[in-house]
Each structure stands twice: as C-alpha cells, then as structure tokens.
Image: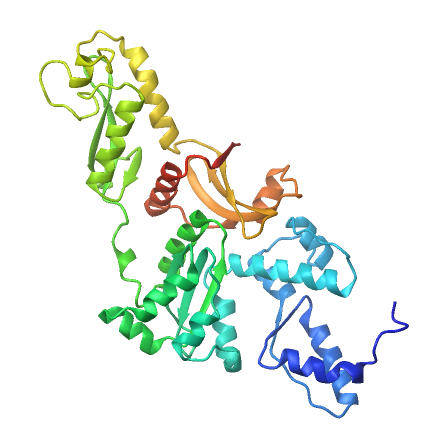
Length: 394
C-alpha cells in the first residue's frame, strides 16, 4: 500500500497549508503531534499547532469506560467505523467521536478554550462574513466575544436565517450583541426537540448576559384534574404555582383553553366537567348528542373516566419509561430522548445500523441533562405539536 505513496517532503507544504489557523484534533494527539514535529524538524522547519486529544476529552466527559482505545471506545458508544486501522477510517471515526464529545460538553469548555487559545481560528469580525459561514440547519448557536466568552445562546430550525435576524435587528439588545460578537459557533442537532432542550439547559449553565428571556418560566398555565362528588374526573385550567402538579403545561391561557376545547370535542367529553360550560343543568354538547350525559349523571362515571384517563396518560409522563425517537443529524441517524420514571434523563444520537439492545448501551449514548419543569413543558408541548413522533415504551 505504501509502495507508490509520496514521501513526506512532497506533501509537507500541503500539510502546512491545510492546518494553518486550525486546531488539530486527534485520538492520542501527543503521538500525532510528536510525529509531525519530528518530520518537519528533519526538513529544518519549526512546526507548531494547537491540538485537542479525544482520549483526554473522553476520559473527562465519558468516565468509567473499559478502554479508551479508538476501536473499543467507538464500539462501546455505537459509532460505526469502516476501514479500521486505515487513515481515512480512523479519521472519520475520530470526527464522529469528537462530535459526541462536543455534545456532552454542556459547559462548552472545549469551544471557549479553543477560541481563546487559537485566535486565528476565529471568523472575521464583520457580521456578513459570520452569516456566510453559517449553515441553514436545525441546531443551537452560540455567540462569543473575542475572549471566547458566550454572550448569547439560541436555537433555530435555520441557524443562518436566525442569526441574520439578530444582525439586522435594530432593537437595543441586538445592537449591543452586534458590537460585542466576534464569533458564532453552532451544534447540529437535527431534531428541534433536542435543540430546545439543549438551549434551555445551556442557558441555565452558562448564564449568557443577553439571555434574559429564560429568567422567567416558559409556561404559565397548566391542566389539572380532580374527582367530584359523583365520581367523575374533572379537568380544569389554572395557573402553575408549584404547589399542585399539572398534567401538562402551556405557554398561556389561550393555548390551554384551546387544548381543552379540542379534547372535549374529540373524546365526547362533558363541557361542564372540562370547565367549558358553567350552566347548572346539562351542557350544550348534551343537547346536540356529543356528550353522553355525564353532566346529568346518565353516563356511568367509570365509562367517562376511561376516556379522561386516556387523555391524562397520553399527556403526562408520570411513572413512564420511554424513548422519544426523532430525526438525527444525518439520514442514517436518529436522536433519542430518554424518560425514566417520568423524569427527563438526557438525549443522544445513534446510527440506524446500530442496535440498542441493552440498558448499558443506551446509557452510553445518552448525554445526561437536568430535569425540571421547563424541560417537562418543552417535551410535552413538542409532543402535542408533533403527533407522528415515534415513542418506544421501555
């Protein structure tokens, strides 16, 4: 294989050109850097580049692995590798591993330190150049100052379009951001749900100075239930106050009432028992035969409660163990959002050719994230809007 390969001095200039202003990422980077420096030294050239080692990063971000060799680590994490021990195959595997490590680096240390260490790697400060370098993909984007500090985090189904809106806006906040930003980095998520969850988590972790919006809750109203004296389960819409746990949450009162009205019509519920009708006698739907008589105690409460319970179970995570499967960053990839005992645990990506057949394999691909009321609201709202999502019960 090496018989007709070029000598090092024949490709040395090309190596200098393609690594200029870059940070070299390698698995066991110390070895690769030493080899490059040695070969260039033989040619009388002092070669020096910043580097990142995926072995060291993996030990920090994915602890307790049995082995950190490239082959065993990628196999444990479900990263497909073709052409092992060949330069192209190992390089592609390292790229996929590095992407996973970037996703698991919730504090964004890798990106922030890289920007600070390697100023040549920054984009041009002119806003038009920054926009031109961004892709039109779904993901999370990070605006940085010259020292690498993150000043704003956002998500979008079209990153380039959204950043362009920031840079063309004339409001006070946007103008201040335009003055300070020198670099915009991004992470491809493929899934809008992963982008929403990642944005929420990382704003709370990094506290960027221009992210004031998430200081308030992203929801205000919730759907609650109670059983009346006749044994019927009633639904009611109210403000979320932290004392009573809602079935699901909404951004405002209008969207909550709209949801209840839709559920009432779709499941032949009683308007009085869902808070849509306040008359003392029967509800309007009973008059047009769309209510089976719960308001007049004609329909037995057990039959009525079955329909109500199905709605509650469908929109509540309580005690559920499941995976929400959504699109990934590539055609042959899917994202997985893990819910255990009604709590959001994190997300990950897996290749369609890779079988998730044990809990250990599932845990290895999941990036742990914090569970709170905001994440519950984000997931529940997304599930209401995207009814064709694949749900895998565990």
